[in-house]
Image (cartoon, rainbow, N blue to C red; front, side, top):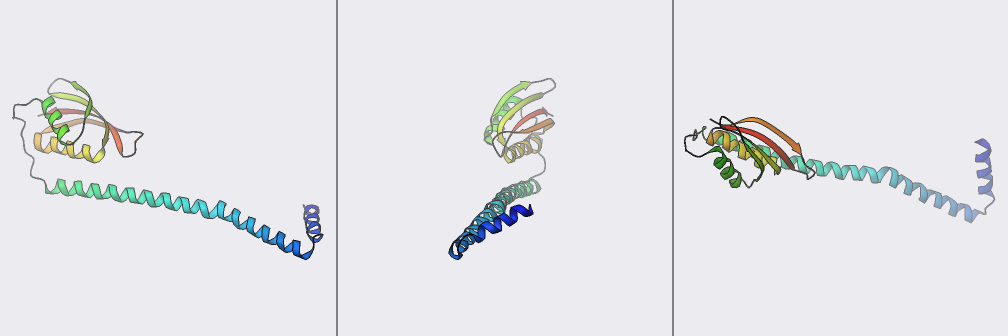
Length: 163
């Protein structure tokens, strides 16, 4: 290593003064470029990604606060289970009112149904489930959610029972 550095210094001193200054400025430029590419640029990219995450979380928090306010200010639960309609009609009608679509429907026994919703937003699902439970006296017996490849959308399997 010592031999290599001494050869490098000896090679540097073989150049005249003007060439040495040009080599030093070039080495400084390369060092600054490497510093920019290896340190500053990745930090800037991570900062931008964190800013985007914070914006998305702020939007989510605002949606949750809006839903919480809606839940807190909503009327007392209304029992409209004696309206004569079937749970299938009720589910279809309320899904449409919230802009949701079911991709699978399986009626069960004792007034239960299983349904699948693909590519729905969590906030839309929450509003729909709130309406079913508090306005139509429909109980959620099982609920499973999975993320989809589209950000902000989920796939939902739910089992409902009308009381």
